[in-house]
Length: 247
Image (cartoon, rainbow, N blue to C red; front, top):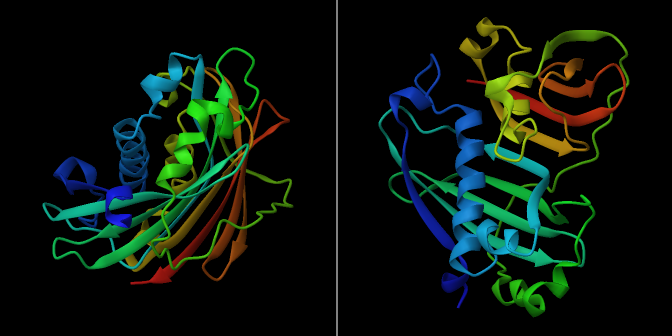
């Protein structure tokens, strides 16, 4: 029965999707995860196009990705996704990333909310289409920790940039995956020669827009780091936790 509730989608690690080590980048994987969520939801009647008709939209609140290895250039891989649970104001969606032989090489957990596109206020998920999203709840295993509470104490700015054209998505704000890419850029290239990201968590707090100044704050050591992005000298936009392993 769970098989009907799980969506499986096939991909290839294209040359323009890998980094200088020849492995899929975390940003591309993140985009694939979000696309799979969209495919799965659309096929079951609660996708973006459908809810947009009611002036609603899905927004990502939390994302945790944990990988044992990344697909190499030209390798095929697949992503399974399913709804773990649904509450009044948010839903949990999980993922399994599998290599070409179907072996799991990573998992991800995400938390989503639905908001009114005009008021930006949350929508009661159980009131949308009679709560039919609950029909797709699935108890497939996802053996990684749920997203944690991330705290960043440092007030010392590590880097800053202005949000530009390539950062902005169809909703008119900075794309959620672009934050991940910008945070990964805080670490030196040589670090990626000997280490890899084992786990990456994002907690999205607020939206930022074109020409906002984004300030980056980074703290941690020994392979475990926390980061925060603040806009225009004040409001926190998102927080991240990054855990590295030696290759």
